[in-house]
Amino acid sequence: MGIIRIITGDITRLAVDAIVNAANSTLRGGGGVDGAIHRAGGPDLKDACRPLGGCPTGEARITPGFRLPAPWVIHTVGPVWRGGKAGEPGLLRGCYEQAFALARAHGVRTIAFPAISTGVYGYPKEAAARIALGVMRRERDAFAEVIACCFSAEDAAIYRALCPECVLGDEEGA
Image (cartoon, rainbow, N blue to C red):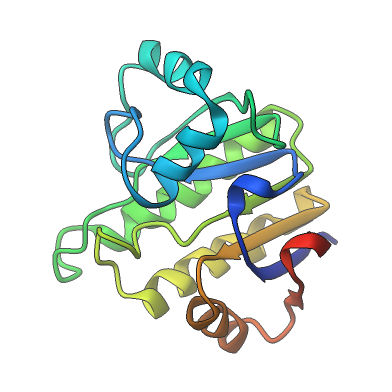
């Protein structure tokens, strides 16, 4: 059985098979984790995203990682929080499910996720973590390790409270 590890750190520094990018629908980079991944991946990452023609909310696309330690970047577009009445939970679940499906199709054994949609998209952090962990628990057996890479200690504490069976780690231990 694969493990779920919770860390606080910089997802762009993780030496895993794939990192997941909380992208915008254009796949051209932006703020937050999306901007950080594009800066770390270099101009070839942006060039690889261009022919994909964007990505609808709740779906995912994959590119090479270029200058990143991870050979693959899985780009997924989370929903903007609109109070929970516009299908946001299903769309967010789709982000995780499609990212895992692409990872399996590309032979990924270790994968790291940020907290999708919880930054400027405004998704409530605990609700988003419940969805993320639910999908991670269902999918982990197909992977050696699934990492929830949290931006802050506050975010990591939410994941830890919801996942007592998860392994705690740090960025260097990932």
